[in-house]
Figure 1 (tube, rainbow, N blue to C red):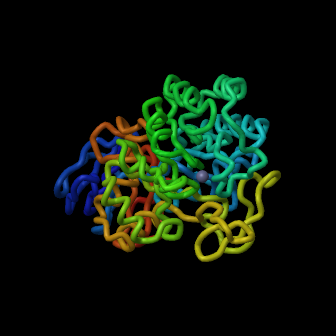
Figure 2 (cartoon, rainbow, N blue to C red):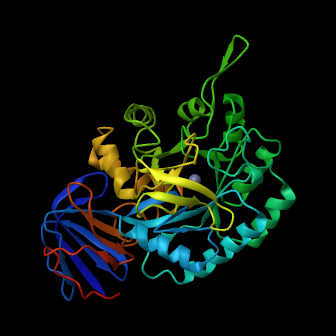
Length: 403
Ligand SMILES: [Zn+2]
């Protein structure tokens, strides 16, 4: 099967190719070209001068469309993947919340089943376990009932249970957290520091033992602290100082414009991944909702474009979608569209270890492609060469393409 997307501004994302043509063959990118070229037997999509970019990759997401990955159903996985695909996400890392072990194992089972049947949504890049090994002093919206120290007996059981875990977030200052990081590294699992009160010396040791990413920088994380007269650098300063990757919730609420600009200035587009950290209310009307599973979750309120704990002392996850993240980086943080797209494509692909097949418009990579307009409104989403979402628009001509 061949598909030709013509008359688009390609975002590779290292440069623009105006009036570009992108050719897809058997689910892969076959080539990118300046100008129009003949592709015999190809179905043709006219991009109408809009942008054609690699699909967005979301490294940290809990839900959307009214569902949470911990709802205990395969359907939840599929609906979340379909919901976010409509906003430009072509790959995502389903993320858990701290929970009882039984609920975690059910979620891991559902991941396997959903992954085998995910025909119309963003692809899954393995599971991200957010917790339960966190600092009780930095719970954010994680349920403190389930927060605990790393327990080798427990995590070894979980690691043995599922081979689908690709990322795990933990507080590095906890007893046993360094051994835990080493173990994750050994298993090829991305270890991230999160929900932590660590000071620089603790983050440095963690970095030396396998932790390479700071989970939602600035959220549920220590900054500079003072003990007696002395100041200590926290996790935020450590993430800036060390050669670590950072992910940021660029929903425009969790981080105000000056912090988005500061992070971009210090870390640059190759070290920053934009994440939604979206909960179930993403893509839904505002009002009451539940963070986490329907059974054990926390009641939250969605207002002002974000989820909050009922007493409004803490955000409880975002309701963002990836298009909104890119739009915010451009409009709030004054970052170029190229760099904003890079932080939503090439950089997360590299952080997740899938850059050999995703994240850039390069021949041979998966044809995960999106088309969007000047305001990052998604017109079409293609996953592995198959159109899974198309906004009704007279500019598009190919509606009968089947993979
Ligand atoms: Zn999260």
